[in-house]
Length: 373
Image (cartoon, rainbow, N blue to C red):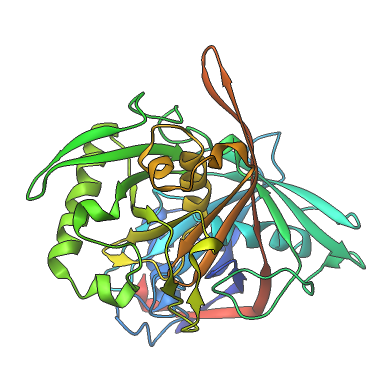
């Protein structure tokens, strides 16, 4: 028996994240064996992931499994996985919006979708929640276009703008934009007490809490928040209380009125008039260094709903605009082209657009020791 198994692999940056892309047909059908191989590719468990392709950071230990579409209205199947750094575990319960930005380019360049200039539309079936993300990918010379003048905070330089429409992701996990039917809920949190929160479901369910309710300003850096172990424990308890209420995984974000703060990456000052409110997201026990694209969609939509905690933190009259600007640790995240209509049956979200860039970084083979199986 050969000592090493080789697996075709592509490494992509999607938005502010980086992911290993693998084809479904190149992996074992048995999920336990599949996940053993994937963990070995990443070098998990190991806090440095030194024996694999993982980047020893939550934003770079991400996985995309790609396959032919399993439903007729899609061009491709996409399964997202968050590969844990310190244990042999892969979390498939959430969606990554940043990695989603690279799925359309991958589908075109790998031949799943025929390229059409100047823009190719790719309908991505996200198997994690069985919903569709519609990507509009710039194309030139029958190849995905990489160069452009569009910039996103948290990524150096500029690139070609990829448009992602997340409107089908509304209520993807719970069946409703507001899973509890309320713009606000009071959670009884063990070790914390009663906390007012808004629970909103777009892509991934989000739990939004006013930063001041936990003694935060909303301007803190990830390092400052992560140094407070008691705060992280309480944050986990808040998320668990929301999860118990909706019986689904949920991500916690603290929000605060906009004010001046320092960019975590560049050290430059982000002025108060550059954002509509501030966000600090807790993800798997750590503070997100930017803001997850799935939460850009969820939090931006929540901001447009009167009565939510996010709307309370936002600048006045935000609902009269179609753009939401969120100040995260590394800059500003924009949600544009959001269209919400109030109907007799409730809130109808017609369109949610988020703009990202993506780039293929490496292609070749990942090598895994045969004895992992």
